[in-house]
Length: 279
Image 1 (cartoon, rainbow, N blue to C red):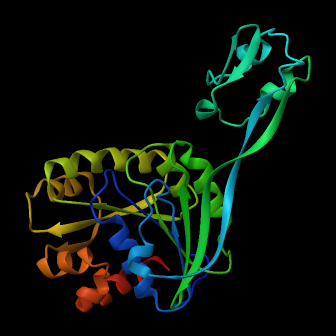
Image 2: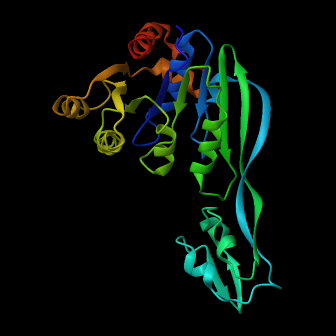
Image 3: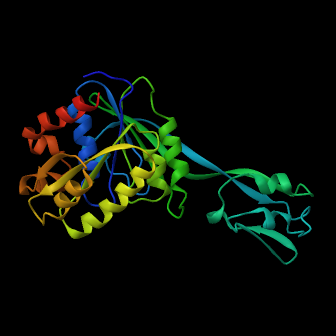
């Protein structure tokens, strides 16, 4: 297969449904050179299955305000300006709560005393590598930071526009997931046939529909629960593009870092059909 403009995001309403399993399987099924972007920056794990050869590592920086206490007179203009409560005045001087800062730069521009400057602050890293024909890019946040979209945007910008793209999105429906999915042409929502799976699938469907994205559903561990997801998809006229049967063999392979396709080669053709239908 070959189509450089292909951009597929794999998402889910909750963690643990098999989102990364599906992302890796899609990349392996492609055959030709393709990129897999691991945008689950709080807990990236595609590398556990791809085992890429690391080629480069670079840090991701955020611009955070620093207060020159000699210049600051505690006027509070920066505090009034900040919509995220990342600044306060205490003891007659401004102070910064870095974990709340969104790096808009407005406080530095509005300060009448020019007592605020922006300084780079490391919040994570991006690693690039190669696993066969799969070019792998991973974002990973430093412990203690919560601004996942900043790292995700850097991962997306690091892609090679000449190659097709699989995006392993963060779980859930927060701004992190929206950031990862926003650059995709098509979204595959991975779920499981349980009441919890259905609850979070509904949230994910509402989010994707709100973004006007084309999407379909993949049911992982099919046959292990109820038919609630099947009924919902039929009611909402949502295509179930693949059902991955529950398998002890797959679970055992997963536990030792082996991919879905390697554990069940019979699934290679269904994944290739999915890709062919989207090209």
